[in-house]
Length: 336
Image (cartoon, rainbow, N blue to C red; front, side, top):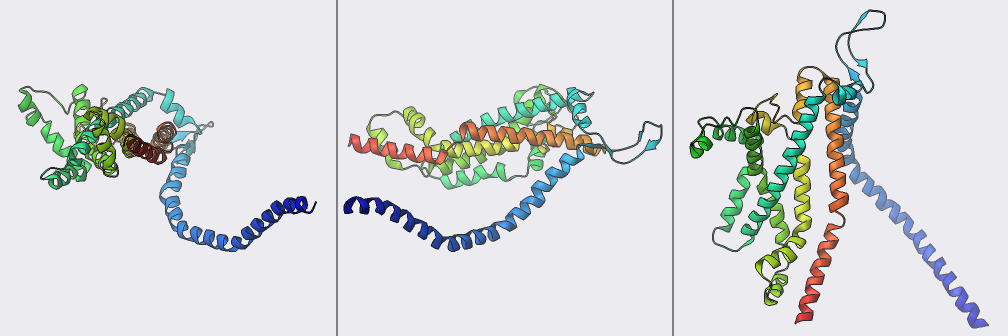
């Protein structure tokens, strides 16, 4: 009887002791929480000033129109006038709807095309730079040059290359108007964008390659795996976290493309006009309500794409990579 009472009282005493420990730790935990809040508050304040406030201000501005108008009694009114969702209705179904959908298509097309090409070229560049060869440091430094050049300067450089009497036409032996409106203009923007930003993807993938243990590749080589099998089953899965981070950054940057097509091709060119260029054009014409509506739509588009990308492809990337490394090491030990 005494044994049963003691065994029943043991869990209760354990729970009470755990509760007492939590109570004793609570002042220290509260102090740590207060310190963390104090350290993070400046960053949150800056983010609120430079991110949250402009978003709220743009959303408010998109609900108003500017300029002169006539009220129901025939009197002229000036200044801001509340329009509700009128600016958004004009964007989607008004006279400018065709231009908006064209800009939306151009933005999506440039993002998809350039990111795919940059991912492929970036992985190839990372694999080359990861190999041990003479002059590897010089190659890695030279890869940084296109990415380090400001986008406007890069666009001017490629504008000279794609000129009617430029290098590209001299090499092709023809006269293609690359800076005019149409398919050649799209191709010129894609080439210039991929040349500039593929090194960024390559550097991030190279950082991912350098943390992969060499014994994993050695074990696969001893087991008779070919170069393609090592790449498909070891390199690509283990470098996937770094590659997805690079692709995500590039997608968010490409969706906001403005300066490259603006400088390389010019404004109001139907084939290369993007959402950012459209918003800038409306703001230049002092239609701030419509410009804010375009900017808000672009923000929502970028946010949805980023959220979908992270939810579909970016779940527990680091944990998956670590588990793959552990699995490869266990397989190597089992074979040994």
